Image 1: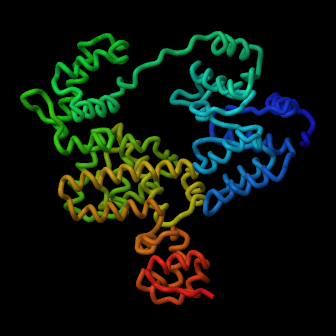
Image 2 (image 1 turned 180 degrees about the horizontal axis):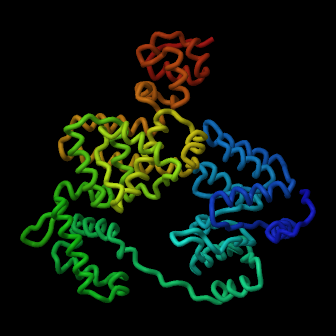
Image 3 (image 1 turned 90 degrees about the vertical axis):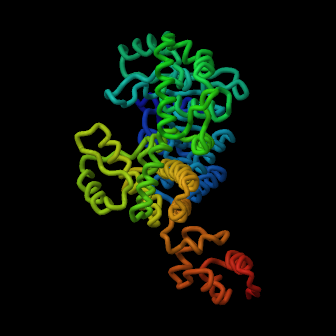
Length: 488
């Protein structure tokens, strides 16, 4: 290993010291861009490369069908035994980085606090560069609990007998403040998530559906035993909140009153099984009702599911983008299942964000690749994948609700939207992706070669097919089509 001369940067010097001790470290920063920048800066100082890190670097590049600039950046870093880790990485890349750290090939990971929970990694040091993070009120100190989570990554029992958690400060005053708040400070109280109404709606419906509770009395009695009630203390107010939730579930036809109390309707049972917020299910049902009497396109369903709590965080609409997003809205307006609110209403910003998020999904099924999405929407591959997965789940919920409501003509359109979303393809490739080993890239190659459906594939000579998709895939396609083939 070759390490360049030490610098005045305390972070780089801590990295040098960690490597000289033949140890590993996690560097916690407050943003994805910062994680990438820190990893790149460290990688440029640490000149280390071997067969293992070279192989890891190649696997990083191969994780996506077409590497993005982010992939190139991560691959460059991993060659030197350094990496970054955040929610924007593709799942396979996260796995490679984590396993590389466990195996000792990766010595340093610059990461966001998402790595502080749920992973047991052999880090001797947790270096916390940032104890402030940008929020609704500007740069704010992170909670003490978050600091403890990050510090707790150092010196895990199965890897080390000791560990070090180090906060970097820029002045004596900041050092004293950090010691008072984080080293000697008291962790914040933990609050029950049941106090959040979307969570309460889900659990009330689930409890009634599973027959754990069935009457007003049993519902109140159940919640009186929860941590929420212990914290809330005002039981009368809590009962009012629960009664309001019950009234909403009745209005939405998810539960109904019966002699013994409450019972889930068939619709409510399916909503509970889908585990979506009942408010989201109600929103989807309104949109599906409108879809029956209007022309729908893929953007119709994409926007419907994007304008839900489950899809958050949504893409931010930057000031310079407002005009462009609104122009695209005008083009799509007649196909949308939710009308634009007044720009003076509080929900307008979220509506616009949901429309931009739907536009990103629409570009994905227009076969734009991850690099294009990153450049156009500032959405990294991992973030894009996460939104695609959530949108697919909500589209499945749409399909199930439409089926229960007997909206048969919509089922085909929703299924089509789901398939396009899964594979990232235009509608013209739907018949081709039914074949195993044929995804977005191979389906487009076949289509561009004039093989636009299964009938055309049955007629083409197998050697010609092999020149397009390769020998093994050509043989697989012919086998699936039930055609004898003798290649070469």
